[in-house]
Image 1 (cartoon, rainbow, N blue to C red):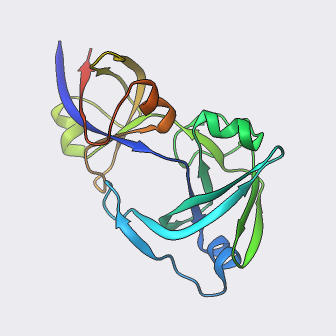
Image 2 (image 1 turned 30 degrees about the vertical axis):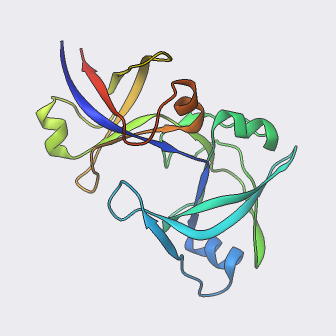
Length: 192
């Protein structure tokens, strides 16, 4: 069976904001302040943090990721949803139609998101060249082997292809903890 290796990145809860929401939460004309680059080119963690407010509770200290997006989106792990009292679906990033919303509070204001809360589907970013090399295309699904005493196989891992991506697999903290994974570990992708 053919396979290839991919580094894993474990993604903590975070929020992507539209420019309108950035200004409503942090002040007119505000631009995001980069603290560090992320694994995907052009993506970065920001100095800015917000508080998420759901029907059951709140969650302070949620990191904003940049750059600004067309629509605001909150990405949570399943365990986060219990504290907030929301029931988001597992979705590919950007596919927020019909998802629940919540309130977001920043130092200069508060906004209500009518939708945009998801549990991000586990996925592998890759370039068109990587995809062609492994006979994959955007939207395909693969299996990934996790070694170790808490190992197993991650099923239904989404392939996302773009010339702006770098090869990297993203999972959330629940998945990372369940399999005792750490950032940068190389995992085997099975090609059936």
